[in-house]
Length: 403
DNA sequence: GTCAATTCACATGAAAGAGACCACGGTCTAGTG
DNA sequence: CTAGACCGTGGTCTCTTTCATGTGAATTGACGA
Image (tube, rainbow, N blue to C red; front, top):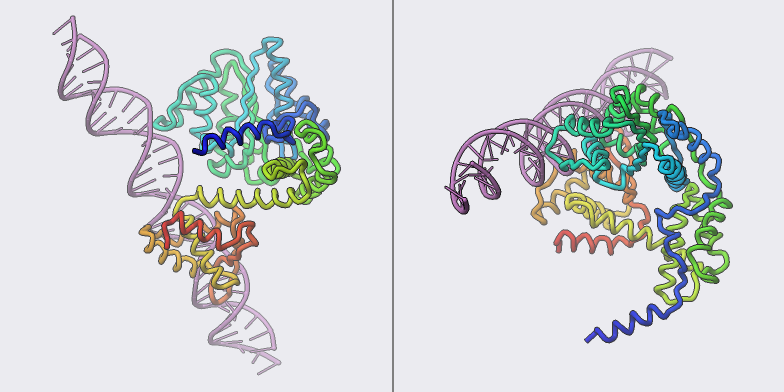
């Protein structure tokens, strides 16, 4: 029945002139051929890593800067070049890039080492072995022959937050036991205070060298966006001022280019779906909303039930009383809903943690305050969320089978 | 009126338990020659 | 005799509970002017 209509639709879709020429240039993992405004940093990285070509261990390196300031990009660019030279000269250089946040597979010491061992073709079960065992497997495989290993740990702060800094210590220490090979660690973090709380031993060995990535300013963002847009879009696909507005927006958000590019891409997708011939200003606004909305929906639907019930309690209470809420009353309400849904209520201790997780995720504003004689608690308010509350509430009701 | 002590209602930390998942080695069992 | 099924042990991981300790200002109450 609908088949015929659909073939027609797809044919029409293909026949339509796309505003995209090469959409890849807007994907988050795209590496452009030239990188703007990061010459200084790239040169530094190259300088620090260059000794590896003489088979000497490069210094460990720590890079920091806000999100979307080109840390990962610059690193990948430099290491790719480095690797190219190394392969040409048949040097035993290996570079491993691990994003500690992206993959759930690397958020514990065991998993990280297992992941590393897998890069060398060792099959490591996802669980069941003692961590020591995995270390020694890894150790043996890299020390078999001479090798310079550069290990890039992106979002290293996430890793340390979850597993503690002991593992970094272990990793740096491993060098002294290796006979043939050497490991260098490149840590990338968007938290500049990250090293403050590290064990001094780890700190000094990790940041033998440091590179700071300052945020881009609006003009720089504009140039970068322009570069990407030229590749990504066909001619006249962008209305005048779109790029300017996009970069202004990103500059406001501490110079995060990644966001600017995402915004541009989503805006273009919206305009394509709306069958307009070019990306207009209003698409940017819609894109901004959509990005936020999707983020919230994604968070909500992927969180466990307990989290959802807690959020549901907060939303219900908040729609009833538009002022600040406190942990105690939320917990009481939460217990009630648990009964309704047949969930076993968690302790207040846990719910308290859940609430603070929500704060970190940006769903709510939770602030610890003291009400003097009346105790200490979290003051919870809801930010103006991109998705209207009743809609969220209904979504949660569906998720939880609440009536 | 002033000032230190008290008190509340949680926050925050540390440790440990439960239950799921998994590897490994040993033992048992059934099928094969 | 051997491959595969099955079990017990010991390991990780995540989520949670339990127990313990911390905290900051409103309130209280003693004190002095």
